[in-house]
Length: 439
Image (cartoon, rainbow, N blue to C red):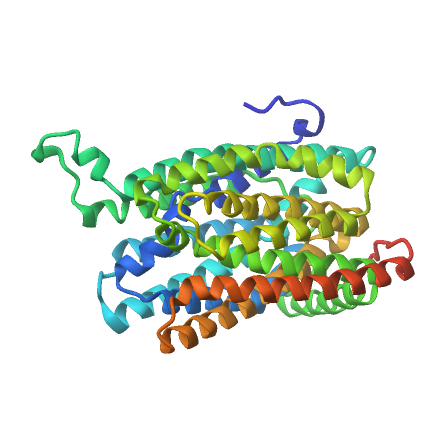
């Protein structure tokens, strides 16, 4: 349990750790791609669905952050958790090999999932950050964020192991008599059922948060107008403050490629000959590694600038992507795990930097601008990757592995350009300042 002292004397800090753990450590993640393809979708359709997911976030991310800063963060978190419950219920009833009906339900699921992510993004961190005492707030937030990441790692350790074992019941069916065997079609839905229960837990956490701001007065129209002005001013501040723009741009490049691979990782595991029952165990190893990421990222950010830390993450990503492309049996696990660790490293760095430059009145909005930028990049990259897969498949090549090779060259070239341009802008950008914006 979390000791109720220091920054965790605040109820919101403790609830934030619980909410982000149950919300993010979803039991179906180790089998996400194969779950959809085993339902009857193609890998191309799955990638397209993820582009829709990202598009929903692009449309709703910043407006939801502004609404959190005007209507209240707790309302957005309750709404997000409720959507999580609904999206999982849809997957529980989606028909296998249902053709257009299946694709339509999965499309609704991905849109609701994106809406849920958008509603939670920014509001969860903001409601915890602003509940901390003003004195020593930055140091206290580092502790809260590091603790949350470690709890998420522990959550992933459990959920990844459980999800993989539930999805492939062959190990269980080989141990028990026939009457106790679990049918494969039932097992395929069990990880989703677990996430459905996680959604209910998230809803319980969200209802217990204490609002950290006074919602703006006025009618719905006045509040929406206030939220719109807040969005515009914060977005302009983000893109015109050079160091903020550089952090967002470099973080976006690394995150979009890493997240696209993360959604397809179960297909990669199949490519390198790893049995499905072990997917969750591998995810658990990643969770163990992620336990140490916050400490490493915290020390790196205390010693170096945010840009230098991000460039280090990009360099590791370049090497890892190059090692993924050959698809070496089992050996390919090492670079796959490196990509997951880089995601946490980059996420900690960007979040820490933005909290340091944001004013309370715009905190959730600025974090939502970050979410918008990252998900726009992820959606665009997923769409481009799906087109690449379709083109390679039409040529009769080994499409997935060939796409991994093309990805390495794309990322390497883009990373060099971003690194050179980013360092130049960083040196000329001066020290970033938070810019309070009134509604």
